[in-house]
Image (cartoon, rainbow, N blue to C red; front, top):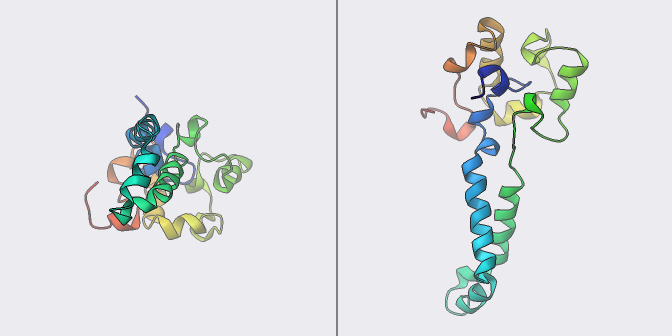
Length: 153
């Protein structure tokens, strides 16, 4: 089992809260894509589109399904996973830090700007890690995405 230290990304997000780490989602998406191909569903959709216009969007659906599969993160960034290119990881490693919470400039850091827009509790998480340490902070983390505000994890 992975520990809090491994699951805490360099930027202060908790990997298991992130949609791209949801292995079951990607397994199901892969199974669905494989089953649709096996059934030649493209031809079925073309036939069904004559009576139901929703099936005319089958190619768009496949593009979205493939895009979803492309989001998968197979391992936490501290374990060699994460994005192929990550400015935050590059910055942290260049400064020889454990994570952004150790940087005296994290509250005004422009590299974290894009994450702040998408992860409303990033500052809270970085403050918790700074205060409680990487091994103890995760039990007090808040929601990961803006649409989860006010919902329980």
